[in-house]
Structures are given as structure tokens and as C-alpha cells.
Image (cartoon, rainbow, N blue to C red; front, side, top):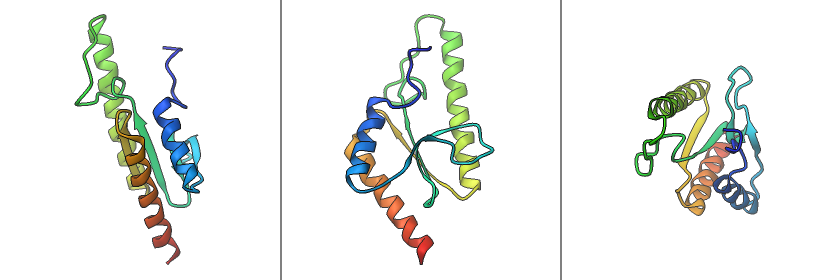
Length: 129
């Protein structure tokens, strides 16, 4: 488990590079809410946008998740707990007025960056106006 990256994965880095090239600035692996013991992969605090780029295995991707062959009880339960925690995180952030964007690691980075930039831009304009 130590070798598994919780931040700076290749999909995250690609999306961040594209966002940065568009002039967007953000926090990496940051807590959107001070009291919430969970971090988002990319956080836009003024716009209140939290972005998560979920790994297919660890978050139970409906397209790519393959149940483990060794110790299936433990690992399947772990993935189920991760999925439940993801839903709880989404609910808590939305209740606090945040917009939550979730992407799978297999989603094209360009599409993710376009959706994120559009959402951040729209929310920044609505908060200014």
C-alpha cells in the first residue's frame, strides 16, 4: 500500500498541466473544508470547486474495475468503503456550497480540463456579478 500514490498521479499531472496552461491557478491535494478530513486532487477555493480524479481500481470504476483474485473479501470491502466515502464527501461539499467534479483516470485529460475550466469560469463570473 505504501507504493500507491495518493497524489501526483499521471492523470492528475496531465490535467493540472492543461489547466495551468490555460492560466488557471489552484491548490493541489488540499482540504476544501477545514473540518473535513479529506483532500481533493485540485481545489479552486474562490470558485468553490473541488476536483477528484479517481483511480479505476480504488474507486470501483463501472467500466474497468476487476474484482481482486487474492484476498477478495478485504479488497472488495475496501473499494466499497472508498466508494461510500466518495459519496459522503460529495454530499458534505455540496451541502457547504461547493461544486464537485469527479473524473476517472481513463477520461481524456483534455476533456477533463475543458470541463473544469468552464465550470470554474462560470462560477467565478457568478460570484463577481
